[in-house]
Image: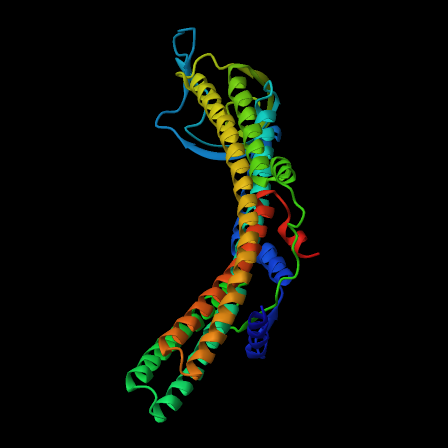
Length: 435
């Protein structure tokens, strides 16, 4: 652990001083407020709000303003009932060219719940979209935490790679000194040179990996990809003390995906009621004003008022098909919710066990690092005293690098498992890591 502390200290010293100091809390607030996925989800909310307004429209009066010009080939005439000598046989009833204009308003009075069911369905759909936005926020937060931990891990693994290069360079000096003293052959020096070159290539790979993960952070935060980022360590352990039973009950009560499915089911139930209402009559009133240019009529302008009822006697089976379709979709949604609940329970249990397993890996890796450090120290002493071989020292360096890398991976594996468990349990990640 002493060597791990030195690596952490070296990492902090080697971090780019001009990089943007980023905290996890700051990044989480940004991605859930203005991230791309969240912005898209909010746009879908606007679509759902428009659907609610559309569903309410039948309760509003429908007003039509119209006008038309008519040209007739023959002037309309009516035959006279009397056939007297010298009397005309018909009289005109309208002009052969005339203008008509008017306004008409129709108001729905009652449709046995069809429109109200459509409104309720649209409102449930809006609620579903709002819950989808919450789910997207949770996923965006989880993705950012993963990217943030990847960057932190890259910093530590980059330090491990640097430390490996320094250990090989130190061993190279020892081998060169012994070669000049005539104690060893040139082959041992060449072996160290090849191993050192390979280690420097791994260092370049580690630097590239960090650069890519840094760009991913910038992409999530809508920043330039090449902007330098210096991630601060995460001190919080918000999953500490969380039991499996608490996680399961929290997931069932608060997971947005379950609430979203409940809203979808409620919307489909209203769709069934709306489809059934198509069999029932619709009552309405209508009224308007119309002027028809006709010098043969006593009242070319007239007002009208109509009270009516429409009854769907037969629609070619469309109404029955709509009801059957809506009921079948409702059954499918309810079965899907049951399956979803089982999957969430499995997800919670898997995340919980993964966290406990990751915590055990950390303890095991600490012991492995201590043993690898001691092994390298002993092999270096043996080599300098002429007892050990160069291969044993090289193997000890490789063993220490592996142990240190596994230790850091185990540590950040715990933090990833924590965030996964909190997300599976339906916790607010922004609130949990913002405390």
